[in-house]
Image 1 (cartoon, one colour):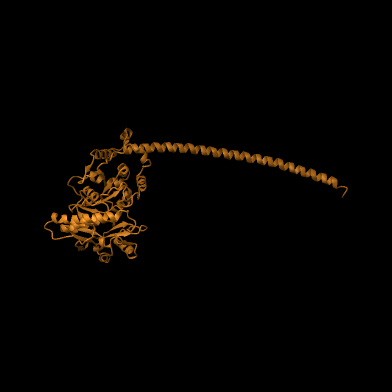
Image 2 (tube, rainbow, N blue to C red; image 1 turned 90 degrees about the vertical axis):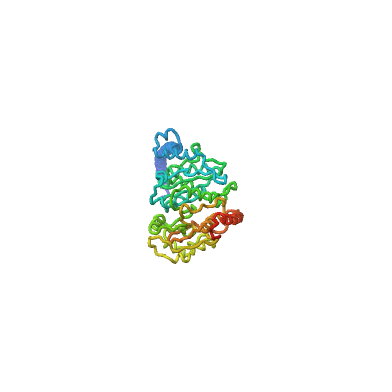
Length: 459
């Protein structure tokens, strides 16, 4: 064995070298194959990436052309005039005409008013002196551009004629003009039912927005316009408008009221919501029960937690009210301002929905009640000297009282404000404005004695 070991060792060495050489050859062949596969995959990936870049470039150019066409279709251009629907060209020309008038000044000379800046199809097609069921009652509201996004849900609930007065200042005048036109252009339901009015400072003018293409890229349908409005959401805190500008809430209410020929008008803030089917129910009620002279119809006002869905019916509202998710409007800030509504009596009467609206009870006005109500178009206007925060609605309710009006509370109709009103969420000058308007309110009440000399009622 020992003598044969060298031969065996040589054989083993030879065998080991042979195997190793085969492994190296095989490994080289395998590595070569792997490299070839990698090159093929890499080439395929590069081709796919190149095709994607070409496709994205094409999409970008196509989207750019589409945007330019959309913009020219909206705001002008000879090609658009040739291709646009005649009805849309007419709408564009009506806007141009409204702007060309320069608007009118309000009584104070501080504000410029573009009444019926954009008319709805309902208003445009209405014949003078004619009235339809839809024209019996209009909802009138007011806002700045930062709260205009509420219009979508408000109109979805209301589904009838709506008059909106918008206050804009500075760059927002241009922005508001373009966005409300885009809303009327892209949103069929808004085009059909909403009239827009614009109010700005007397030293400012609104112009046709044909030179502002870069600000409106992406406006291609109704949803995109509301998305753009969302970017302006909560730009100001309540009435804290940039430049220390006063928000003329009562002027805006009167402008919105004056923008409709309806027999009756409901005036609310744009962040409030009426109960469902109110328009149809009110129409049915006044057909059964013609309103008395000097009578307004009160809708109890509530506020709801932000996370909660706005109730549609009284039954839904009462359920939320009983568990504290809904409470009387301004309960924390000014409980006396709504207490005369008598919420306990209203909540406990006619809880079951009958589908029939009626007067639950009638009240006389007491200070400082500021009810939301449906009134005939001939009720006294809001006093436009009141601006910003405080006494702007109380003053008007006070005048109704002195003028001899009675306040009939509706059985199942209501309005709801989105979110609880709480201390600390108002702008810094709220208390200062409230004090100033309190002084103005005293003077206003003295003026009512002269305006209604035969009335024995006082505020």
